[in-house]
Image (cartoon, rainbow, N blue to C red; front, side, top):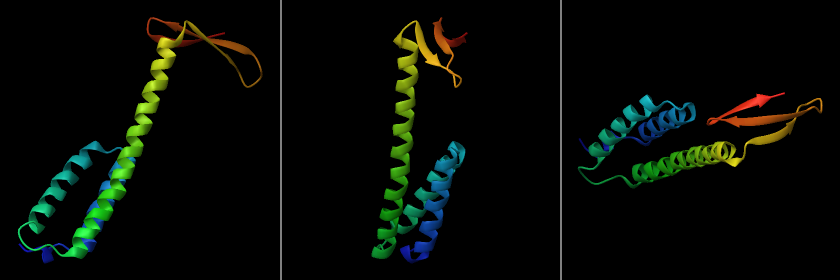
Length: 115
């Protein structure tokens, strides 16, 4: 098949589906979409590539990569915060909404609330 069989609209639809799966955390869908993207790239890789289609692929891939980087950064940040809580100290003092002092106590790798 020639690259003209892949339209810019088809590229946009496929990457939009990938964006939706990324936002929903749908790992199963991401695996299937990766397979579909590979098939699409094999279809256009056999001949001269339409520059407009190639530019659309680049643009859409960059857009989705930003989401992946953002999600990765959030996961790393959460992991650090949880590790800091677990490794920090025996207790962490907090205040409730009504101003009552409370302590979060670490026990055997768990954090529990203590009145």
